[in-house]
Image (tube, rainbow, N blue to C red; front, side):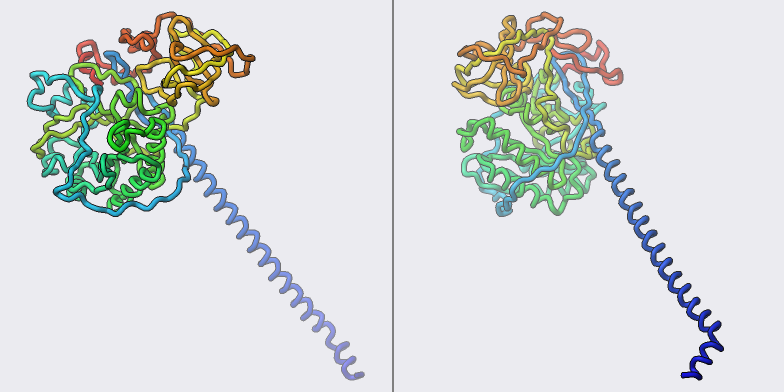
Length: 501
């Protein structure tokens, strides 16, 4: 022990130095580890901040993107409006697609229906007695400013897509399938694969449509699943919208279907298509858009209008739409049979968001030129079935819902001059002709009672069933003015051509 103590005393300086070195080394290691951890946390925070900023930028870009939508009124001027686009998510139950069966040669394709009066054009003029040519469309519709396309199915039979492209067709809406209107069977169009592959190989941009005969939600979700399934091999090549085409309300297997259910089905189909990464669009005729579809609930979706008219007459449709099927007897090099011709007002292959806007009744117009609603608070009921609209006009796609006879509502305003009533229908402000309502009793004043008065006193022609005269500014008397742009406003010499837009 003594010897050990002497050894420690003799070498204590060295031993102290060793212990000091060990302590300093340990402290350095702890410091390095601490600094590394702080740097790692800082780097992670920077990555998170960058990702958040990118997500915010992407969201902002999606919300503020604008898209040209043509909303012609009954005037001689071309009108254009822009609407913000937005992104929204939907949650719907998943339904398996029906078996993919290509229609056999002997199947009775009962999807070709007689179009309603708003679609059928009058007798062809001498200029188009042999069919509507692309050149005629360009001259009569100022088609050189827009994009000309067509829609096809097996009814066009053999198509030389190289010639079609060379003729000037830039896009094609191709039928991928349909549900029969009697038996309810789902088939893939016999020429679908041939048409889509031929169009893509020729450099024609492709969109899709499905002819629906769904009578319940399950069937319409089956149809959407069917479309998504058959498009899988071409998913990254479909650049134009995927359309919902339903034309048999009140007919065949849909004879008992209501307009509300039909609208619900369209929403279910288009939301499912949007969730799959495609741009949905609703195909419909003018009269159907005015009186059948509940367009107040469909304002978030793009519209493909069908109305075949004498090419030098007015289209007489003032609802927003991005594409117009203007003729059913088109003549295109490369196709022996007649074909539907379409005009797209913007390049829909560049659209980045599936929805135009969010449907919010609070954003609906509250004041209308030519109308003065005196505030009242009365309980009324519908005398018979009637359309409840989001504006007091009958010549535009503004239907919110169908009101059944006996439906009770609170009337918040009445315009005795034009014969319209403003009402609260399940929390949404709607307008119904006063003659369709029966007064029951006066009720207590509610917060929803408001007054919407304007300085214009012209009688609304829509309520009386007359045609609105037009003004030099492109505003129909009794209608809401729409903005025009100098670059697309035709001169007086071209007013006849522009009237067809």
